[in-house]
Length: 169
Image (cartoon, rainbow, N blue to C red):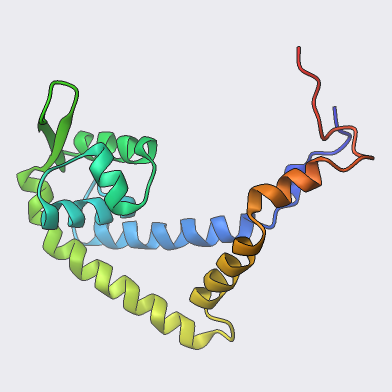
């Protein structure tokens, strides 16, 4: 067991809190407009489904560059809010996700909100000395030369760190 909790220090915490606060602001905007039960993470799949038509979870995950598990969880949450439903797919193992009338009715607003959010982010980038899009591009370039997993693995293998390799039962 370690002597101190390493989770008290985090390079990620501020970014996670910022993104959560921005999502909360978007969700607040939804509620102000009388849109209940809609999370910001629903906008992208709802808009995409409106433009592509029904998709399987696998197809939607591919379209959005997300994992099957993440999209499956999002679809389940959207079903609970009557934004999407499922219908039989090409074979007995697949189901296609379709927009409900409620989901379809929200798409014009969600598209407008998407555009406004993108414009707000672009506006924010003019107010800071180092735009977020440049940070992302620079991080991607650095990770292309040495992937994150390699960086973590190298640090886990530090010879003087007895906690690097936990004993298995």
